[in-house]
Amino acid sequence: MGNGLTIGLALGSGSARGWAHIGVIKALSRLGIEPEIVCGTSIGALVGAAYASGKLENLEKWALDLTPKTIARYALISIGGSTFLSSDKLFPVFGEEVGSLLIEQMPKKFAAVATDLDSGEEIWIKKGPLVDAVAPSIALPGLFSPVAFGKRWLVDGGLVNPVPVTLCRALGAEIVIAVNLNGDLVKRVRPRVISPPSQIREEQETQNREISFWENISSQFTSRFSNGKTEPVTKESPADVPRLLKVLASSINIMQDRITRSRMAGDPPDIVLSPRLSELGLLDFHRASEAMKEGEDCVERMIPVINDTLFWEKER
Image (tube, rainbow, N blue to C red; front, side, top):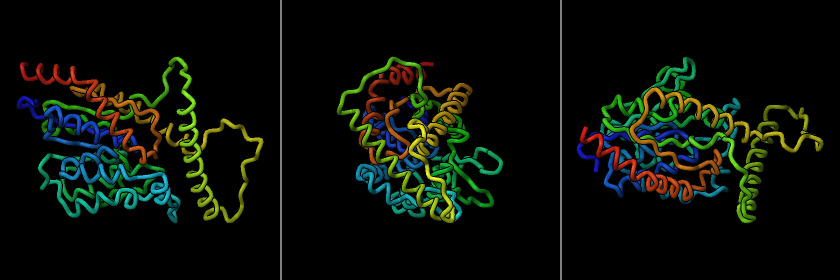
């Protein structure tokens, strides 16, 4: 179905929402679309690397086995207080599977985007060990530690290029299919919809898990760095004060939404796939099945556009 065109797949950032990339790739494959070029930012780099190296099924199986308890066991606070989670622990299956595989040895062209922590420069990692390309790209500030890369400290590529369309084109893609995980995360003015009781209960349970998770981290941080001198939140504190996870997630969503709009306006992809993932939280890695299903559904909704675009480009 690629019609002889070189197709590039740009997989965007989005933390736990990134499992939708797996669904997108599977659905595209069923349509006969196998991109020769795969570029990723953050979680998109992780999934893209697994796909480009032929290890996507292994990553999918591991993701589907995750539970909230599993995620909670990965929580930690480093001595410097610079991180909440360990990427080595959170994605162990990836390092175990790819080992010392070099990007140059892979059957598909692959590259990842990271950010220089000192200069803010966008870094394209196109060669060398695959693990060394993915690790800095997923190092989301506030959640993961920066990664040493030569003489640089690198962090999440989503800070500068959340959906790496430009990188796909630089590697030779004639058609770019972009997967934007951040399209519906910043609230728009819309009619209020009253959720059914079962959905309300599920949302409350998810919120309670998140609150417990982050309060546990907060207590670790306080006990380690405050020397016992704390000012506990009083019972009179406003009930609607945003908690740590809410502030962090919303800030990241706003930033990446704005950057994505700007970058994609300057270099628009040929096809944009935007899974509807606003209900998935920053750390909802255990909800992989939901994300993957929406990734597949998103492709199904866009089949007419995909067909028209590929046919039109061939005839041009």
